[in-house]
Image (cartoon, rainbow, N blue to C red; front, top):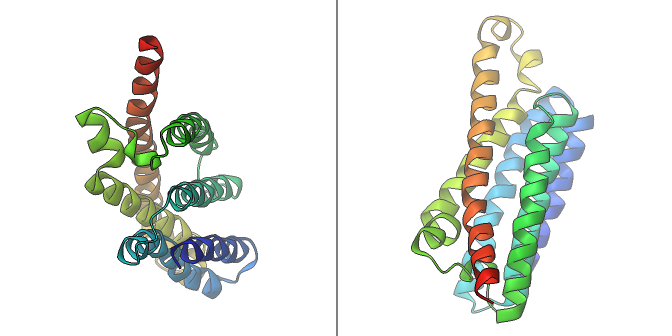
Length: 201
């Protein structure tokens, strides 16, 4: 069941992307709700896996892979349509390839969840801690929803947008920049611990 929820997240992502490119203003406004469902399902699959005792190495890796697909696709799409600078998805792609390669190899070698391989207290708090993971997920969800709102609101609020739209645009860009900062901060312990282990071998 948990893996089906993870799979549904990818299908909802496809719906969001189609709406972004081909939807009317009203459809794009509806797309914000679909976007929220994408991120709610991210927390729901882990909850269901724990409640139904379905937690597994495959499920954990599939969940991480789905998270990467969702965030990378959205960063790239919003950069492609001009809502974001292209360096943001490039940072995410580089960081994702590096850290996920390390975590996947470590998880397979030790038969552990990708989040269970962190050894230091700081690493566990930043990478695997429930608070940080939840905070980061909410931050990305809010950022993507604001970016989604930038699409229909100029058409739906033609009288207000010229005077106040820049506030939403600036807020979305600041949140996107903060997401990049957190992304890098959470990736550093993975790389540092991996390099330290390699020196000890």
